[in-house]
Image (cartoon, rainbow, N blue to C red; front, side, top):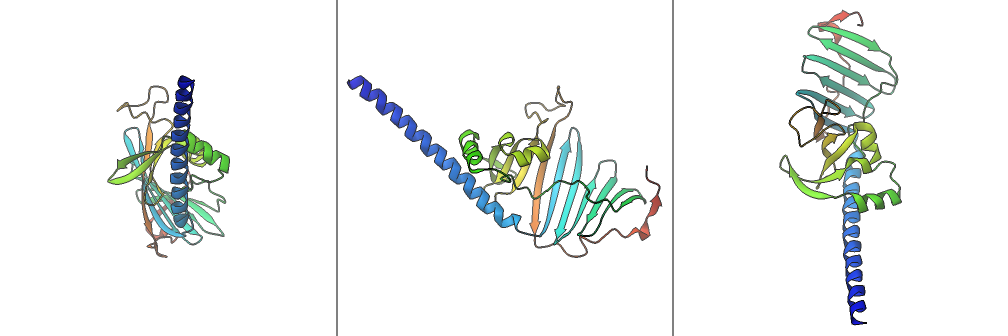
Length: 228
C-alpha cells in the first residue's frame, strides 16, 4: 500500500511538472505573439536581410510606406533586382551595370512577406501543440536574447522560407534569424543531400521610411535593355 502511494505521488509530481512546463511555454508563445502584433500593424518600416546561400551572400532591402513598397535584391555578381509595387501597378527591374531590363505591369508579382507573422493561421489547438512540442530554448544571437523555435511547427514560416528552425527576439517577437530546410549547422560545407545550405539574418527599422525610399526607379541614368 505504501509503495503504491509512493508511485502515485511520483506520477502526480511528474504530471504537475509537465503541466507547469507546458503552461510556461504556452504563456511565453502568447507573449511573443502579443509583442509581434504591435509591429505587424505598422505600415512604415525597412527590413535589411542577409541571405547566405552556400558560399555566397545576397542582400535584400525591403521598404514599405503605406501601400507602396520597394524590394531591392543585390546579388554577389553585382546584378540588382528591384520590385516596385503600389495599389495600381507593379514593376520589376533587373539592373546590370548601367543597363536595366524592365518588366512593367506584372500584377501580382510573387514576393515573400518579410515582416513575418509566424503565428498566422494557427488554431488554438495548434498553438497548444506547439507549446507542447517546441523546445523553446532561450539563447543569445548577435547580442540579442532569442528563442529558438521549430520551423516545422509554424506553417507560415515553413511555407515561405522552408524554415528548419528560427530565432525570434525575446523582447519584440520579431524573427531575427532563419535556418532553411537545407541548412546543416554541423557542416561547414554544402549539404550532402541537397547540395546547398541557406540561412537568413533580419534587421529592422520602423517609422523612418520616406517617399524617396519607395519611389519608382528613375530610368534616366540607365540604358534600357531587351528582356533576356
